[in-house]
Image 1 (cartoon, rainbow, N blue to C red):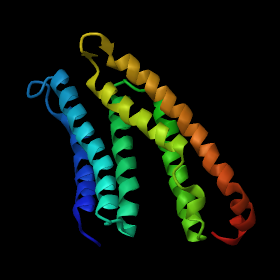
Image 2 (cartoon, rainbow, N blue to C red; image 1 turned 180 degrees about the horizontal axis):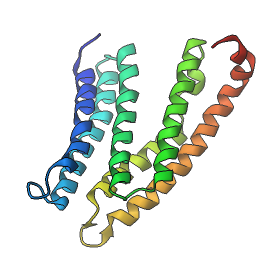
Image 3 (cartoon, rainbow, N blue to C red; image 1 turned 90 degrees about the horizontal axis):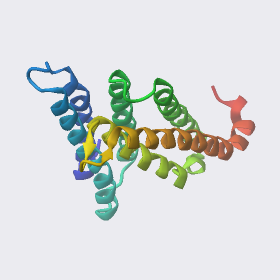
Image 4 (cartoon, helix red, strand yellow; image 1 turned 180 degrees about the vertical axis):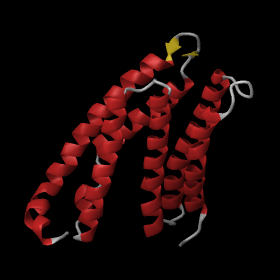
Length: 194
């Protein structure tokens, strides 16, 4: 397993995920709910920044690796899934939206793994739709974790809900986009592999 700063940042992101969840298990007399929200938001934002920063450094320092390419999306999906589960538990995100987003991540991960096995992983490379979807959900999640007025006039819950609906729509759209790209190979090779 290669070890460098970008991979260290990715591991840091994985380590921060339980903190986003765990802060809500602290007794309220230790940390009031508003402080829990603030702590979870801060940890999630730090994790999201490491997501951008590790990719930037890996490209800048030419430290990309197969392991880093594997670990980075796994960390992203764990981070989003963990935060969505917390938000569902807190009744800040609709169960159905969380199911769509998490289900799509599982389906596309399986598709990418299968495409890699047949040597066609470039056919399902990240698209601009996927990048916009990721930006929408990475903005929505901290807004929903914050769950309070921002600058006294931004209702973060309402804005977060709108962005989460947008992320869910883009999630479905991007899933169909990837499936359409992969469909010829699925038809051609689908029966040959188990």
